[in-house]
Length: 210
Image: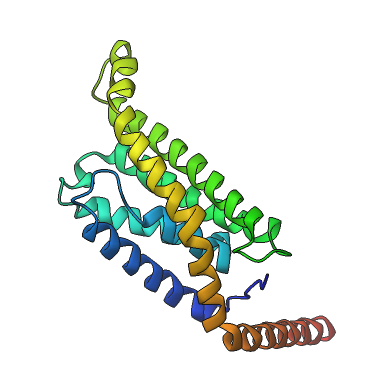
């Protein structure tokens, strides 16, 4: 598997593109309860370009979508918004961690697809758990927590199932397609990054001699 080096000048553009796709796609899917692609976009961005990019895509996408959500702005519920942003940033961080674990495998190999799918289930369960707590904590008595969790189970099932399919089946092929499109960019990025380190090393050496 190719591991892309992302120059700082490119990082902001990648975050912007993935964030726009995540927010627009989730708005398009908003008629379907608990089906979204922010997790998908953050995870793929992290897997391809590293945890920093993936985490930023997840956090920024979730903040923007929640702030202008058709179901009501999350800005009025700051603790819930915080848990949403943290939860989605975790999806990007997990994608970035798998970048190293699966570096010697194709993203479409059976093992990679299995790991993607299991990761999708795990990050979605974690997201739903912490955001449910974020919703309940300021407003609902502790004694009612179990009943609220139980009421949310059908929505969690839909969320987990959709993300398991998106990450386990769709994400590996999307990652492979993006890699194919960025093949030349990847080589140029490695060269640019290597040259950047060389220049920084030369500057540091000159500074020591001054």
